[in-house]
Structures are given as C-alpha cells and as structure tokens.
Image: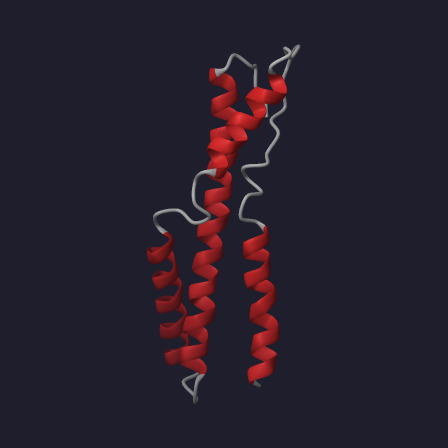
Amino acid sequence: MYRTKLFLIVPLIGSLAACENSGANYQPVIDGPVGPNYSTDLAQCQNLAASQGALDSNATGKAAAGAGVAAATTAVFNNEGNNVRDAAAVGALAGLTASAIDQNSKKETIVRNCMRQRGYNVVG
C-alpha cells in the first residue's frame, strides 16, 4: 500500500517542480511591430517574473486548509486506520499545487505588465 501511494504522490511533486518557472517563460502576444530591443526587453521581463518564488505567500495557508478539509472529511465519512493522515497529506499537496498554479498565473501577469510598461501593445 505504501508503494502505491508513493507512485501516486511522486509524479504530483514532479509536476509541481516542472511548472516552477512556466509562468516566467510566458511570451505575450504583441499587436503591431516590435523594435530591435524586443528580445532584450522580453528576457528582462521574464527574469523579473522568474525572480518571484515558486509558491506565493499564501502557500502555507492553502496547504493547511487543504489538509484540514481533507482530514476532517475523511474522519467523518471513513475513519479507518491511517486514512485521516493520508487524506491530510493529499490535501496539503493539493493546497501547494493550487498555490503554485496561482503563482504561475501571477508570473504571466508580471511579464505582460512589464512589456506594457516598455511600450509594447500586449493583447494576450
């Protein structure tokens, strides 16, 4: 049973790590011509976004909330053996994953806003 859980959790953690800077690598859609400094501007904006952490400041709260809700639900409906502990662990991972997804979205927004401030007409 332990190995089954390990095989389910390891890919989730790997996916979370792989997405760490996907938001920072975002390339916005520019309407109109781009100047000779486009590549430099884009690289600087992406570096600014990448300098933000992989998780936002609410990560701990989201992990705790996910763990609490999952553990409480399991305790009420299926309180057998280690189910509550396992549900809490899965809930915490779900909370961390939600935090990472939010942070990647924020990184894309940072790239878009940075490019707008450099004079590009960003449409997406």
